[in-house]
Image 1 (cartoon, rainbow, N blue to C red):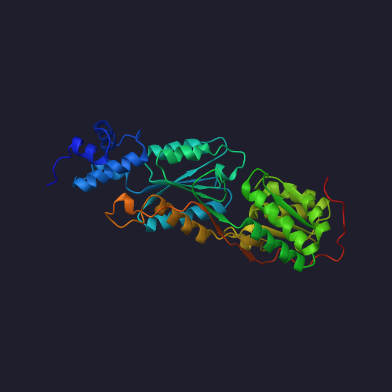
Image 2: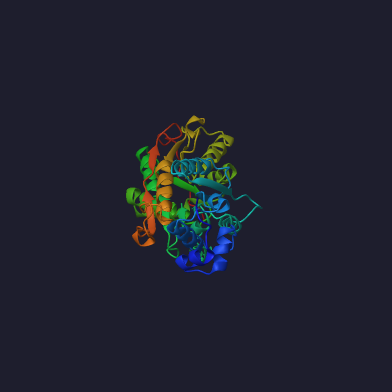
Amino acid sequence: MTAPARLADIAAQAGVSEATVSRVLNGKPSVAATTRRSVLAALDVLGYERPVRVRRRSAGLVGLITPELENPIFPALAQVIGQALTRQGYTPVLATQTPGGSTEDELTGMLVDRGVLGIIYVSGLHADSTADMRRYDRLRSQGVPFVLVDGFSPKVQAPFISPDDRAAMRLAVTHLISLGHTRLGLALGPRRFVPVQRKIEGFVEAVGDQLGPAARVIATELIQHSLYTLEGGQAAASVLMDHGCTAVVCASDMMALGAIRAARQRGLEVPDDISVVGFDDSPLIAFTDPPLTTIRKPVPAMGQATVRTLLEEIGDSRPTGAPPAQRRTPVHGEFVFMPELVVRGSTAAAPASATISAPLG
């Protein structure tokens, strides 16, 4: 039979006060994650059994914060991450942002209060170049490990998992130019987002490299910012078609479906009159009419890497019973994954009747 835990012994082993030990053992949320782990480690070292409420609280909960799930790529990524966590014995807690609902900071606070071992952010404020990145410093000071997916900021010391957005645009542009298109448009989200900025860089650079400096200048004008929705793609593509684009590259599959709708409203056929390329290769997108040519985001590889990286962050890679000094030092920085071009039925040779129009402006 296990002897009752003595607060003084646990406090001495963990290097904290008896009051802090009491808060941890009673499952109170107002304790830093690092302190909580020190107290639990002291319990284990001294051979005490963890109280039921503490076992339940530290049963391997991992928070996953995503944008709204209307874009099918987000639930697809959440599923990969959730399955990978479950296989490792962790329980994912999905927290989804919705318009008018809880903010990222509020969801973070809720997850921290529930004692999650770590948090994964997908396309969060870390992707917004205008956001205050000090929120992540505050989270790290609380001892909560985290991984940031699809976005990057040099101001945050953390692991980032991203697709190569510049390479994605090179793939799309090379494919369309090989089909004879010389006037390409780009439809994407607000410019303040890092993935948007990278896609613009890749798009303009690829057009310039393959069609020359003059085409590079025109490419910078054939860019439309909108929303990552069907309606956003429709609006952006309409403007680009007004300026003579025979092909439109979109920053999401939902935007690409909107571009196809815009073409049909004008009586145009896809791909005979205009080619459309999406981004993500969302579930079921191969079954649209026409099947969508798209850039496949490496979701399985990104999701699995995200989980592995987070487990390293929370020290799960150390041998059982090893002291903290033997933990592997986490590697912070950006891990970039190569996308893939998937050619289907929404792209074809440029129409012979293509006309040259003035650039936007």
